[in-house]
Length: 124
Image 1 (spheres, rainbow, N blue to C red):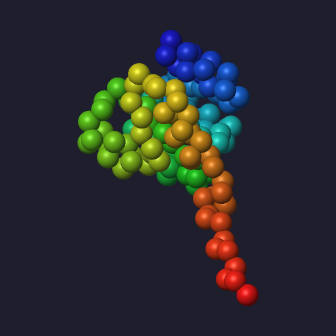
Image 2 (image 1 turned 90 degrees about the vertical axis):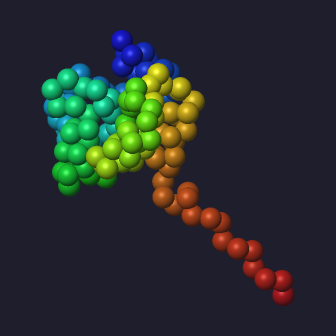
């Protein structure tokens, strides 16, 4: 239910959403679809989100896809665990949409937009 609600909210914001119901499906979809970003629920059945993230990051075909871990655990050690599993960022559930959108936009921003503008030329 949470996955469907979040999907609808992201789609209303212009994002195309694909989903999987478990970790194995998520790994397969990442390989087949090569999404721009992955929102990974860490409490998935079968292969959990921690292991699915490790496998996605270990595969050269999917390693560059940014992953945001989504978990109900809000301990600092959970954030560290997510980063160690290969996730690029971490967010807690229930999801606060504006905060998550900020993280998505930051990770999707082209590297060239992160470069500061050139310094103005010195006066003649």
